[in-house]
Image 1: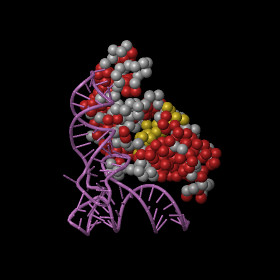
Image 2 (image 1 turned 45 degrees about the vertical axis):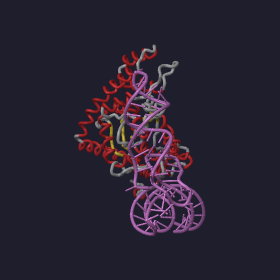
Image 3 (image 1 turned 120 degrees about the vertical axis):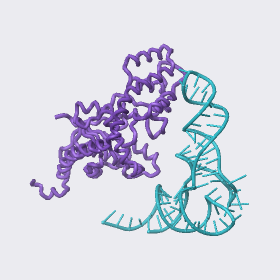
Image 4 (image 1 turned 90 degrees about the vertical axis):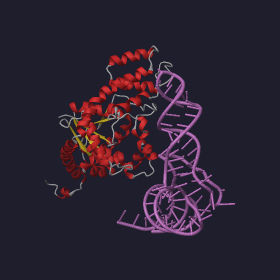
Length: 333
RNA sequence: AGGCCCGUAGCUCAACAGGAAGAGCACCGGACUCCAAAUCCGGGGGUUGGGGGUUCGAGUCCUCCCGGGCCUGCCA
């Protein structure tokens, strides 16, 4: 039996190339080798302020983006978290197995809490829901970035605690670390590319060419090579080039850089062209899907049905183990 | 349940005693630059959380509502 992979992605409304090269491209690769379950995690999205009128469209857009990027619903399960209510049920059970102190030490919570006027208990509890997402399917592999390792460690802790208290049920969860380095903001290359930094700080996968061109062209660089280390901005452009161009072009420009002959305009042209080479086919598929959002919804419905089947079966056993639920009165069956 | 404090531009905040809503950062445009950054020049931006009231005049005072923070009490 194939090992099972779970990963969640927030419905941010727009995938950027940092998401794409960092996570999504991995999703596509993993679906060939593993039994993959991918979830658009809307319950995570509501831990901070959100607009209920916009959320459904964002969820749908994220699904369409992922499909356009090559996520194949015949190979992987793609569904929306809230369509499988067992996620929140298990999260509650896990809440009771999670130490308050552990949660207060989560650096991502401290980070995010600073940015919020209203800090919800849900934001605090986020890592527990995340543990439930993974373990509900008894997934053993989770593709994550380094920033998520702490949360994954918590999930392992919760699983271990559950297993020792109520009986072996959950597997040991292992991270699959993406080998791609973080793509940085073009405008502020010391910071990771992110939508929340502002419009200039990310390049959307589905963004119009003219706009992508503008962002690449105005990307921060430097006054030319100073010592052996590339400046963050130039390194970031080379990173995008490496991720999207063939290695010959990369090597050529890298050589020019080392010999001090490289004009950044040329680098930027190359980055733009290579990047569009990757994005154009994705954008074309995305436009097709936009005309067939009904089809996207069907994919999500079918995905939810398959996810629910696994989730319900596991939940029955989990309830039995901890002694709750109607069926716990009839342990015989 | 009671008490106290707060809400002004995207962000941080200012506005004597009630007398023309401002600054810094961010953002946009231009100059400079191979492109950028830095710098310089220029620009847009606000129903002062919302309603009602007092007043010649309300960001400022009164009142209700919404939202947020802190404290005390009570409690399944």
